[in-house]
Amino acid sequence: MHNLPERLPLFFCLKSDGLRRKKAPGGRGLGYDLYYGSVDVSDPAGVAAFAKQVFQRFGHINIWVNNAGISMDKEFTEFTRSDWDKIVSVNLEGVFHGTQIAADYMKQTGGGVILNASSFASLIPHANGVIYAATKAAVSSMTRSTAAALAPWGIRVVGYIPGMIQTEISADFIDAYREEFTKDISLGRIGVPEDLAKPIVFLSSECAGYISGCDIQISGGKFAAQDCSMSWRIKAGTETYRKEG
Image (cartoon, rainbow, N blue to C red; front, side):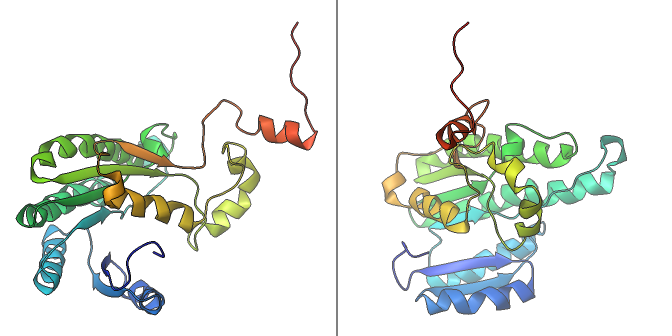
């Protein structure tokens, strides 16, 4: 958030009241005007009410980020209809309804930017996260189609694909498999939240005014090559270049 203008109104739609109370003081300490609401993104009426409150209070919605998501891993034949409905309602329907709601307000004020969180699972799904991967592939498709649909109203739609980012939620999982994850990342390290936040600020700004209808990978070069760690091993002297013959 350090690259945003001071006193810029920022709005967070969080499902958890506890998370809202935990995060609120830090942002305000940096000089931002923060507005929080506790809403389940799978409830279109609740999201619409939140957006209405924001618009009535500040008169505009310039940037909307569809970031909420849930994941579930199971053996494929053990997934239930309830699992499908739960994941789809948040990951896909939440993006659909959120985009509609935001676009309606942006049309009234001359445009804006809608950002959608996708996933590497949209490109390379893993075997036990079938529903999650399907929803994220659909989000990437929706990013492209809505970018074309909303462009005449000055609305850009951009997707972003995060790499492996260490947060409070992911820390234990990443620590358990750090070496395995890192070998697939060209830059040779796990990302931190600032690595993701800065490009998102850029994509939201006028500096990215000609970017729309695509997914931007923010991943440190994850899976950029078949063996992303080779050059690191050569630099460390643990491996040499392969010779001909």
